[in-house]
Image (cartoon, rainbow, N blue to C red):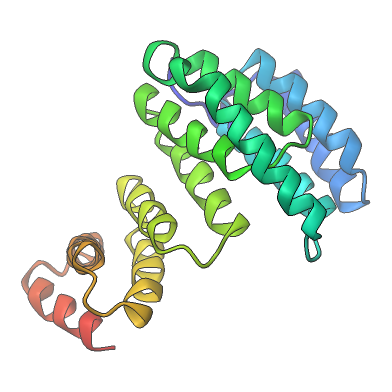
Length: 211
C-alpha cells in the first residue's frame, strides 16, 4: 500500500476533508478529530488527513502543559510502548492503526509518534515519517536527536532547505556534532542539485557551515 494525497481520494472523501478544514477554522476541533479519525480507519495511507488531525489536536492542546499532564503523558507513553512493541517488527500497518487510534482519542505521547515513524519507515511511507518526526519535535523542541531525525526525514522527501534549518539549529548548540555535520553536508549537496548548480556544490556546503 502506497501513501496517497488528498486529491487521489474518492470525491466524497475529499469533500469530507474540505468540510473538516472549514470546521477547524471555526474552532470545531472535535468534529475534525472525529472525521479524520474515521477517514484514517478507511485509508491509513492518507498522510495529509493525519496532518489535519494533528493540526486540530495542537489547537486544542495549545498552552503550557501542567505538571499533572506531564506525568500522565509519561505514564501513558510508557504503557503504550510496552503494549505495542511487538507490532513494529511484525505488523507495521497495525501499528499505524494503533497510533491513529491514540490520536483519535487525543493521547499525544511522543512514544506514539516515534512508533508511527518506525512503522512508516517499515512501510516506506516517507511523508508519514516526516509528519511523525515533526510532531515529536513540536512536543519537545529541545531534543537534538529528534531534530536530526526530522532533518533526515525531510531530506528523504526532497526538502533539503527545511532539513538544513533543523541541522543548523543543532549545530548552533553542538558545533562538534558529527551526525549533524554529515546531514548538513548531504542536505547542502541536495539543495545545490535541486537548484541545478552542479559546479558550486562544495562552495555551498562550506558557506552553510560558516553561516
